[in-house]
Length: 423
Length: 153
Image 1 (spheres, rainbow over the protein chains, first blue to last red):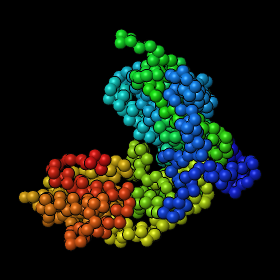
Image 2: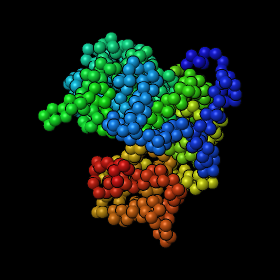
Image 3: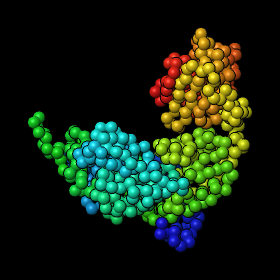
Image 4: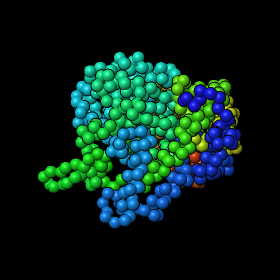
């Protein structure tokens, strides 16, 4: 976070153009004016799914009201308009990730589908029995289970990079895991449960030294920081639109063009073929080869609007605002007796995971909910990580670009109510 | 706050802090494990079932205050009952939890479980209250080693 190298003006009360005007940003999100149990909504669960700005809602509405038809097919005006808008969204994703070519951007349902696509298509074609896939303790179930399915099918071996007590990847242990059998490394960019930022460029460099390909799960990274896939040099990168203030049901798989071109289709259907006869089918070029069937057209267009929205706000300023929230929340919460923060890596995104003595995460979640505060309670689809810390689950407060210092205070006050009940 | 006190009544907090019949009874001959995959909570229920009567019952596990208290209360309620009576109580409790059975007066056993009635206002939490009962039913039905999940009802 180079933007934090010098003192920042208050992110909350600043009003000149060089500061992040969070109140103006909040006005862009219709749902944030809702009241829950007659209290203002304090939404601290953006890591599960972020709320949507008016610009995204309007883009989806505009698509359906003004220029909707199926894409890549019709010779008529509306289909041409919809196709252009869909492909423009692809170009926005390409620029957003600094990919070389729009052909390197595959639209999928979300990161889960992207990882399954890589496991089935790349893994199915290029991995064989005994080959090793390296994951980490930080992974979301969606970056574990697809590899287990592949293991059960073809007999690959899954190796796991451990973490230290702060929740950081142990790079020394990672290096020792790499070897001639390592064919793929699949790790998260930012831990959804702890907020740890992993050194993805270094992870990639080390994997490439051994000839292994690298997939980065960027779901939690793209909402919090600018991502440059060419600087990372990863072979695959994936994220879900709904965590980036875009629609649900749309996501992105980035893959280096030469790798995608060597991969067989993942699903068969329309729109992914060049020609079909009952004897032989020729597949389309990338990325259409991986986009069988009618895609989520409005979702892709909405994702394009979400990218315009966050880049328009400036990702470095968003990051600085969220880092200020994280620092304040860490300070406020760590002062509460009996509260333990899990994940204390020096490089973290704005996610605070914690447990409390004598109170189960679900009970904490319910009590906070009655104060209008939405947090996630549970294992966050990271059961191996929870096991590593010896807990069944945590409470997770995750901060997005629209959260405020006052909302951190509301969280701390809500936690006091937990203590009143559970003593 | 007042409605939270309806949910977290003193009886519930007490059972959560000091669960009754926690652990495996010495003569247990039936057991089952219950999982709530949504939250990772796990409970194991042990029964000493003799001639169709619950001679002894215990549980182990980890979970929220609602699930711990519900399991603890359940063990107190079913001890000494026949398996059929315990099953019937489970059905009445479940109906009460899901709001299908509003009129609970006159049912002495169910009245003792009324401390959990606040859960009805929290639909996401009903499974916490019923997990141990589902597990009890599985232990009675399958004898040993069954596993139930709140997500495969």
